[in-house]
Length: 561
Image 1 (cartoon, helix red, strand yellow):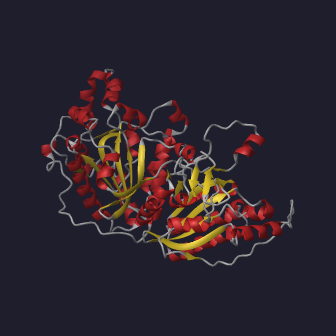
Image 2: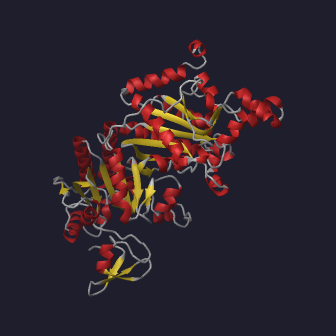
Image 3: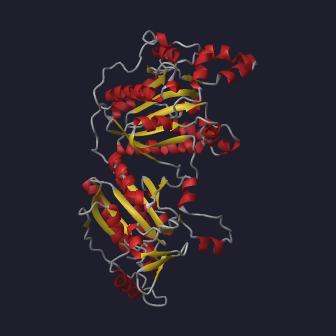
């Protein structure tokens, strides 16, 4: 077994972890998938070990893809490049720094390319770029996902500009997979730097990293030697990247197979199970039907804000199977006030995105009281585009006082982020279903609610401004909030009467806060009923339906309805 972090004893029975220096019995290290049982440090494993760890037994089909490896520069450092290349082949038993295979993970087929750091530091040369590109083309031909496992110091210097061109070649291959709607996954292992980080490693739909794996364009030594900048603790590690919204998740090796299986099952085209039949009565569609749910407007405001109402995370846990949260805006931030990811609703893969508040003071503070900053809306936009690429229905759960109003949010383009979401949602070629589960506060709510069907829970509210804000501006008296609430007609039945929402989801006695399970059951029935109507529509019909819905507001057609 190749163990990059461990120094072997003469008898090859014990290894020493290079992080904690613990002595580990070799067979124990093998059983732990190359992870130190004392400190959790993830060692480097070679390509064939990686296939064995990730793919189903007896499913591995190594792809025989003959490629040419040249010496375009006739490069010589301490030895000629051809000699260095030949030595790498002899020492590793590999032909190149990447190995490609087809296989399955829990029965889900995919193409996998694994970089091997032992082979010239996993550097990206012409042959490596060609192999990764061909693997992607095979995934395209077969219509199955592509996963790339990275371990590289970057582009191969000995091949000069030819190695640089591999960044563009592999990137355009991933663009073709995007156009075909094929899921791509990147598994970042330590280290992944330079041209690999700045191309295929970070262009995949989902980016997962092993604990402690480092990823970046410029390595720490380059940064310190060129601009003399002192780097913060943990810089470029997986944990740093996750906190800054650059990757979706960190998974230890023991959890990788299960995580990948869920992603593949939810994100592979053709894996769709029919929704169960319904009785068509899960949603209130006329004010007369909902008369018993009438609530005084100010009382509705209090109920919508109740701390015990189910949050998006609560609903996800009760509604979806095999949910995998996807994080980050890929631009440097992850907003905790928005959560989203892939899951299955009654066997149907869906993308769910929603505002996230909390039930305690600590949770509310950590989630910014459900008020997203621009990174939250950009994360939502990224997941919306992924849903569109994969052809998955999009469900959004809205519960926010409004977009975060701070200085940093304005500096980062809060208005622009909201506006871009409105435009994006209007043109998504998939079924889009939004539910106001609590507060629908102004543009911060609408940025997740440009949908084919907009529902609201019976005690939810939806308004251009909070009653308190309206009272302060128009009455010059915050105490006039109850009067403002009535004037704004923000209750579910008033919104239904105006056509702002298409239906009302009944709540259990005492409100959703009284019985989360019953509330989730009502919401599930409503979602299934609405999706059953939308799923038969083709992309053009879905877009036309959504645009017509919002085009009507403020017109003679809307007044007459």
